[in-house]
Image (cartoon, rainbow, N blue to C red):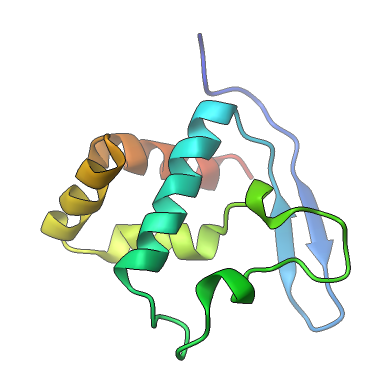
Length: 111
């Protein structure tokens, strides 16, 4: 099964100047990236000035459940970690750093 296919993305501009992109992903890729997001939050819990990382990423004013959204800005921090740290996190997720980096590259190339 080919996991990489043409996708449509939705760009959303907010009143505070942010631009968000919603990109549908296959479930396998989403699960890996969402697990990576959770692991990165646990790996560096004070990465946002001491704010609770889950509360910080809560979608406000909508009925969208936050558990269905992976935050690319947090996931991209994986690329800046040392090779050893990447390996440690990937091992804790039951995958390899190359699989995670391949999924990140797919998301970046999709829009």
